[in-house]
Length: 87
Image (cartoon, rainbow, N blue to C red):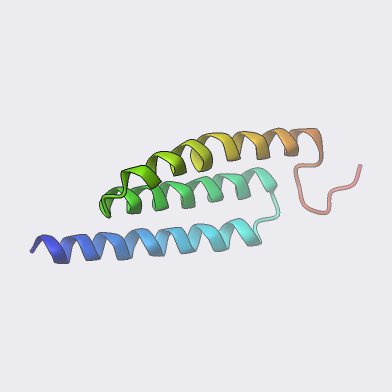
């Protein structure tokens, strides 16, 4: 019973990560793309937690959920928000 629930949860999280990744690639608004990328990172962090990989989880949370989105949002703030935007 527990194994089936774990596998089902992993399947749902992997599907959510895949959908968020695809949405991040096709999104023209770069801030929304960063948000979708962060959602994908949350799904992967939950997957690492379920798979009981705390060392990878801590490194992934520090880089992918904190540092990476902040740097991307700062870079977008310094340039254009929309892809192909010219002022």
